[in-house]
Image (cartoon, rainbow, N blue to C red; front, side, top):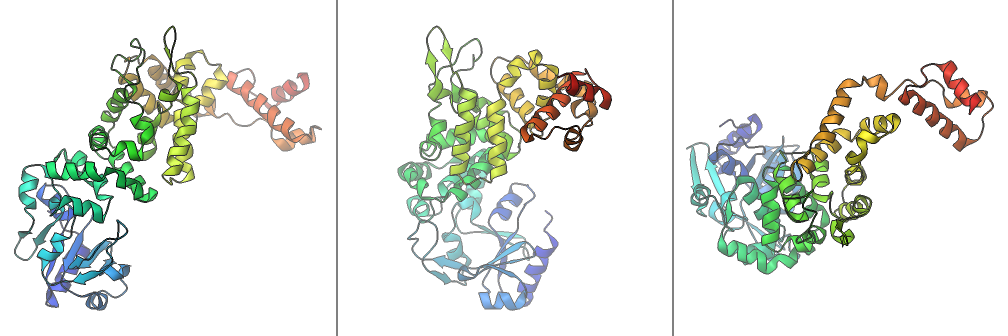
Length: 428
């Protein structure tokens, strides 16, 4: 397995200075799973002051905890932790020389392994190798204590189980269920980041099934929990209720962008509150209400504005494909040329394939995009606002309306020249 050059340099420098130094955590886990690690972490008996001397200019990302960052590699002094009064940070830390004590304070056995690059051997104080072989996520030590220390570990257990297609150990599962309500004490930003990873890494369906099984879903995304048992018209949704439909869509994702993933998760979020059953099942206005709910949910999770707006628009427009073949030419072209349209079309593909299976609207849009040259979707402007002012039109809103009228005519193919645009205004 290839070890990054900075990582090799750090290990060599620590060994030359007489220190213990090992690869640790996720990178060791990934190496043993024959996966190329994305990040490299090193644990050492070198104290923080020795680390800053050996690696001048390193970023002090957790000085209190003996953690520095040098050329993208995290280097941490062996430590044991005191109590975690806030459910996130230890009140005190004790620097150690024994890696076994450092392993004991980590979250899961598969993340508590060390690797000695000098002897090319794994150092395993927590039976992590056995759990890797048995495809098991198990908390180190007392699972109730591990999750009380840092409540976010409950979401991390779900993420690792989904990513690797592992099971969660029975005692670890029960501890999560018992403490599931505590997940609401985790900061929105940390919850957001874990949820996004669950959605965009492999096997998001399994991730959300586990969130539900472990009673976490109802606390962090009650709007998604509400989808369960909400019936849908069988002629359009033979697959089942809104929850089942959403899970099937998640299963079809292949490491999507975060906006597409959230669009898939939230596209039908307003079906529960809009459910009506009279002559047939209806969800009147669910796309419009869903856009508002998506905005509220992602705002609650402290997503940046641009992400919220993209997901909002995906949810708001996901039903427009029903009418795309009946749209006016100008309306259709504006629909197709949106910056979000590639994700909107992908959302529609998943939506259709996960329900009725009818792909006519999807195929029509793809064919139109292939048929229409860029200038047909975004024609060169024939007149500008300055041109209109020179023609004696001074009212602000009126100028915008006229410019849109001209572009509509261009998109419809009824005018192609400046003279025709001027004539259109004159005759209006």
